[in-house]
Image (cartoon, rainbow, N blue to C red; front, side, top):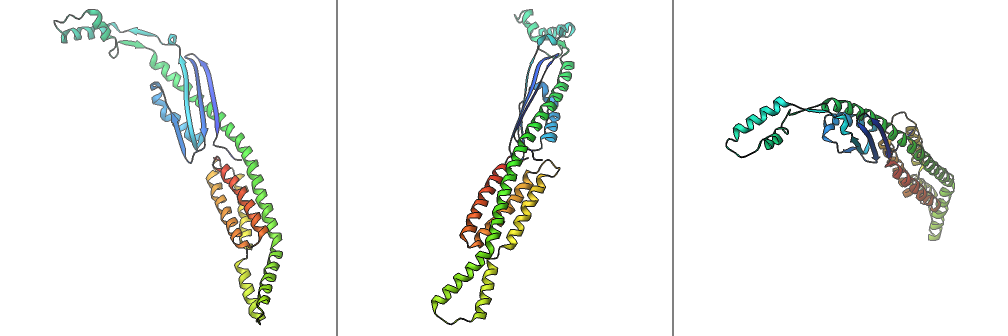
Length: 289
């Protein structure tokens, strides 16, 4: 079963903190490329999110986005009177004789550390746990999307492979006629020269010439590559795109060699059609995980 690198997934909840949702978009890429912009309150779980994405999605260009609107009613705060008074006292000491009013000192003091006690830390921990669970749900949807896309791609790839195989079989059927035509053409050319020819030498040279044009080995290797391609698609491992790309390159080499050695119009036409199907395969493989 193949997986595409293209996918989208989202998950959302109405939590005690408010509405939280996560969107994950995946596109094809040679490697894993994760892009996200996190609110500072989530910085301490950035590595956890990256680990979850890396383990689950393997490869692709990943855009990760958290949408949330936290209700202010969930955050309770209290002024720490003792700390604020201490700050004001110290501020007055370092600014003796100034005309600054007490209200101005108060404005400064409440912005300093520990002046306000809140439950933000506790709520942040709960919120971060919810974010990680939501991320896993969104990733599950991305994976399901990838599998669905992969199934469609697999059908297309099998169709392309079958077309190449049919063209290959057609070339095999042309081989006897091709050899006969080559012999007839060479014999006719020699006869047109009106010179005496050593038949034994002619047969030896003809055999040597035909051996150079022999494509049986290429056809056998091409068949094996096509079988190996389909076998790889059915393997249990998730990441197959790079391996299938390597196999497609080997398929291309054999097709090119057959084309260069065919020396036959119908064979060369079949080779052109095989190359066309192979290009479709390579284009599809750019998006295979």
